[in-house]
Image (cartoon, helix red, strand yellow):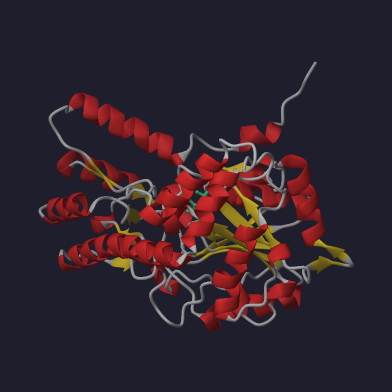
Length: 404
Ligand SMILES: Cc1ncc(COP(=O)(O)O)c(C=O)c1O
């Protein structure tokens, strides 16, 4: 008789966004005349830019002729893409990363949930609270998180690092040393960032206690301030303690095309075992490579035209971020984020819980956001709005909220 992986049963409730989807669906059914504006899920809305479309068309045509057809991609990614990544995301920023330390994948969600496989079962993980839920859930599935406490909404073996207004959404170093530390900056959901000096403290700490930092840089393209690092490898010593995750979803609108990459430096070792070898083995065994067509599209992200067009796209979203940030501030709300990230994180008014504010916003002005408590217990009393809507909808949503 087969048995299931019982760790799955420890996962609480349904996925945050399906719960939101159900509530919004019920609301729409009850009020078909109301136009709902969604600033909830962090999905992009702007189309693929022309430079990338051209590259896609060219690659599609190549697949139609036996001379230029491409079958299985190399496990770790095509050289043309890995070289473009190294040149643009690392060398130009003074970071020492080589092409064979880049592992191309179909996105950061898979990588950030799969990377835990190469670590021992008894490693302790530390996460920011609130947090992108995938880091915790993937460790729960793997049996590394311990038991769930439905009162505190935490797992017994996870070290939670609260990020609140009090510490400016920058976690304190944990009291007990973790083995694996997940950091995501610019942060989803709070929109907060660490300066280079603040991140250096984490790199020094990880090297001191022998921990690995899994650094999620999915929102790196939204950084506008000089002292905010685009990569953890801008910090000294990061090659011996950090893995970095990148996504093409938010910088280039690839949420539906799927492309990302992970950097595992060869200096990152446990004893004399390189994590690079383990991840290469895992990638080679369980993954058959991102499609050629999509990797060519990824290459165009780094072309001259691609960069210019994508800068405009990011600016479009960041204009929305400004509308939300300033509009809510004018209306008297306590608001953070939105400067180096497409997320605006606000304190719910009048002591309302995150879900109470969600309902109020939906019922009174038909605007959808994301309850902060869905990202962890320290997210209670906060609410996330995204800048990924259209400009017109964003302006209207903010006008509606101001009238509440
Ligand atoms: C912090 C963070 N990491 C990773 C991802 C997933 O990225 P991808 O679309 O590349 O899987 C997201 C998506 O919202 C995210 O917010």
